[in-house]
Length: 132
Image (cartoon, rainbow, N blue to C red):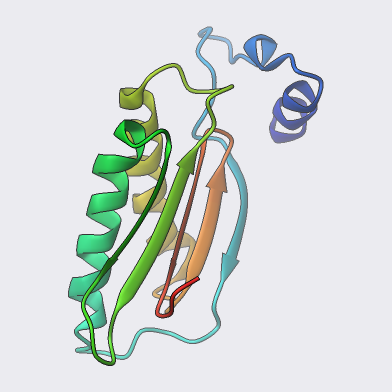
């Protein structure tokens, strides 16, 4: 199904990429990139990352579907960037929903990585310990 959705998107026919229920599968997994280094136990990076992910989920749909943020300072800042695809998603709420699913998936996919990028058909989220 992922290949069919990507081909349909490339051909400008995203409205035809539907599941049996008729809804666009904007939470369909596309790819992930995960840093091999894990977040150290007890690191304040966890709290900064939690705030960063929350801000990305809540604000991207209302910031022209492209939002960057950072939290924390010193040795443990968390930087994040999220985007939503306007050709796939119909509203800011769809963007928020897509990113909420993705923020939950990023932990399971990248297993506590200190930096990660995960993309669904409708949205993409990246976080790092450095500015990018």
